[in-house]
Image (cartoon, rainbow, N blue to C red; front, side, top):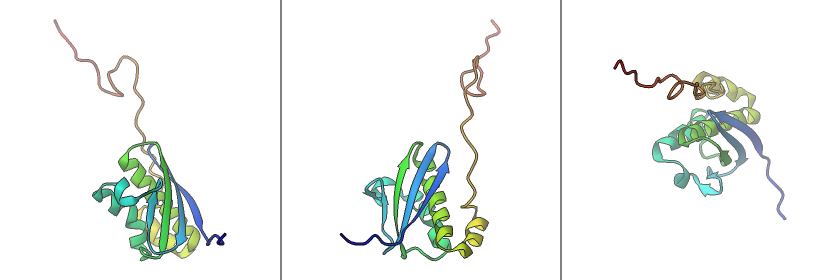
Length: 131
């Protein structure tokens, strides 16, 4: 059995999505839940996921393996971005500055507001009828 290469593991979160990300030295392959990234994400979300690697000029240097759970497409893409940025800071602490300036290391705290009783949604009221 071949020896496992050095790998860096990090967790990213956004809304209700959780991304467990593994970065390994490699050729720049992205695997998400066992599938190539092109089959998992639409085109506009690919740029969101790859943006931390583009900022630190490491796009072809690491293979990215991700396990995504929960949420939708946007939440999962941004959770993966968060996880990749965290893993890059484990590789080299000097990368923290540019990633922090781009806002990739901050966990976005915005969540869906809960539905309240007596309302149709969180804030939407039922239609008022005067007569």
